[in-house]
Amino acid sequence: MFKLRPYRSLLIFAVLVGIVGGLLSAHFFVEDAHLPENWGVITLVFTAVVVILLLIVAYSRFGFRHLRHHRPGYKRG
Picture (cartoon, rainbow, N blue to C red):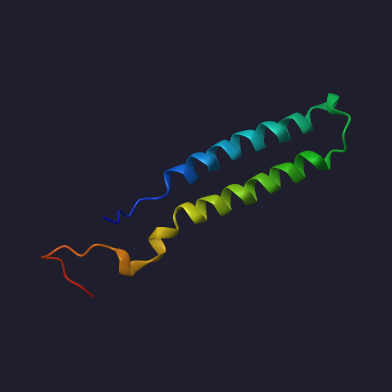
């Protein structure tokens, strides 16, 4: 039966990408990294975009209203 829940694997992957991307950008912000400053910002922005896209895909089931289960006794419409 169809269940209206987000994709669990995509949510877990979004959390892991967020953690790894945050740690990587924090490493680039350290003064001893000997890299240009904008690497940390670019990594942080890229991580945020990927996490947002993964969350949108994980919750994509909620966009299909016709798939919701109508129980008897509830008004339809």
